[in-house]
Image (cartoon, rainbow, N blue to C red; front, side, top):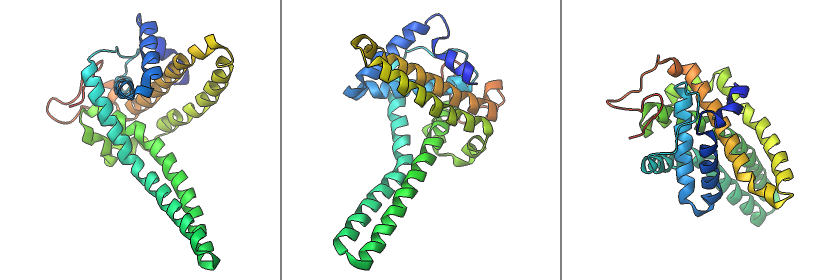
Length: 239
């Protein structure tokens, strides 16, 4: 899976073109709007990989891609509410403990530290869950599918998906080393967005492929629910 993932971003005749477009969008994401386009494309990659695609989808239908990016952002925000809420709660608790002082203050501070641990665990769980949720949304064609935990359970508990989740950790280490080397020179710094987009697509492919293998989507055994839902194997559209 890792080997296929590393070759996937530049597969096909337009591999370099896609890489350059994605890199530009990544560099321009500070302007916000390109970030939604890039996220919409990420969902498209997840869906196509789940269907057994062997090369990244094209950058086209920009309007649909933008709307998909907005939906994906909402999904991530909803799932992120739990760790965010815990962070706010622990901040308030620790500040209250400092203000109260004494034994009561120490108790509040202890509760706050426990909240820190819980928020870290919750954040890890969210990072583990969101890619599967977005892939489910891409395959099904409906935003509500991202919150269908019953369907997601099978994927989340699979070894293939766990491997796809762990792989980015190793890739992130390599990416950080490469980034440090590249930023040492002006020319190298210009290559950073390209490397980042390359790794991002490789990781998304691994998530999508793991989903497809676990659910049978890649072999066509799973049919998207809902009338007219989904794209075909090469172009999954969300409603």
